[in-house]
Length: 381
Ligand SMILES: C[S@@+](CC[C@H](N)C(=O)[O-])C[C@H]1O[C@@H](n2cnc3c(N)ncnc32)[C@H](O)[C@@H]1O
Ligand code: SF4
Image (cartoon, rainbow, N blue to C red; front, side, top):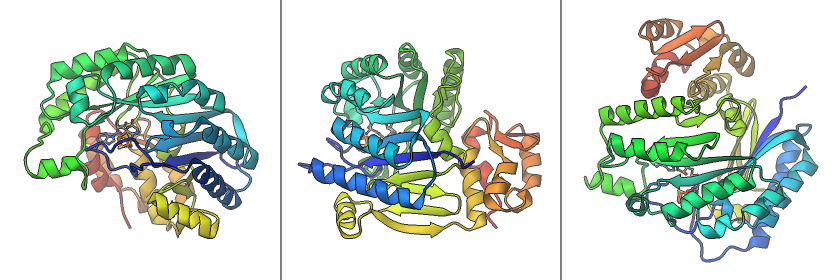
């Protein structure tokens, strides 16, 4: 029995570009909706020829701002995936939404198209912070969007960005309490990262934007863990929290090193020993589809060591950790080839990692040191 497949669909357009964002997102005066629908469907058909005989267990419309997609295009993509592969009975179909009123007005049609989970980019409820983050919505619109999402979709989640310049612990605790008050089963709580090439990176380089230092950020993180745990939404990944059973199944597939197909500009895909990457710039993607019938740019063979390393980098983000036996099967390598047992023993002694049988994980104390832990335990060959 083959494992089910996760499907990622990228929509690259946004109303405006946020100054912190380095996602593959673009502002365009107009988008030829018929061209984009046909291109995504063609790309999907091509993926299906490479990954036959699978059933799709999750679809994730990410962006960019996929809540700007015409619901008819969302329905067409879901319908094509169902026709090409078949969907599992409980297929999770998530769409990332911005909380602008126009997009919220489309929620009913998106639900009718088959979307059963939304992830809303709220970021903050505070008007000054929203302005600082360059967001095109108000705090009230964000509140209305969450409530509307809870009414229209089986599951709703939203994102907040914290550890912002000048943000104190009490401010964040208030904002998080407010967020938890909505009672969604899932929350994504990201610490602000300064991504190279963004407007925030330029400001930070000039000393005009100063994020909290490591200790202050750690205090914010610890408060986040305590409050979400008390509310019944513990962390299951570095930045993701869920009521048990409400985790994003789609993202769990990435972190558990499962197979996924990716269509649309810049989308990545991975199946056991191959990684795929599509043309990133919207215009190049459309030109590739017109030329070749699909947007695939490169397909790379993943050597065993790379598979094992990536599985560890992804899996150790999860509180459940990694299954060493599964990575041995997925990579064809014995565990000694990809994990340094001495380093694990040392870190376990310091309370930063824990191992039970084949399961190896990073503890709450270790998670903020994840990068240095990875550099110690992952054998890169
Ligand atoms: C693909 S993005 C956003 C989707 C949607 N367009 C939106 O803005 O709501 C997914 C999430 O990543 C987070 N994010 C993006 N850039 C970030 C950064 N530099 N630091 C922290 N979080 C970031 C935001 O919370 C955002 O909602
Ligand atoms: S954060 Fe979202 S809305 Fe803002 S530019 Fe990035 S993808 Fe677009």
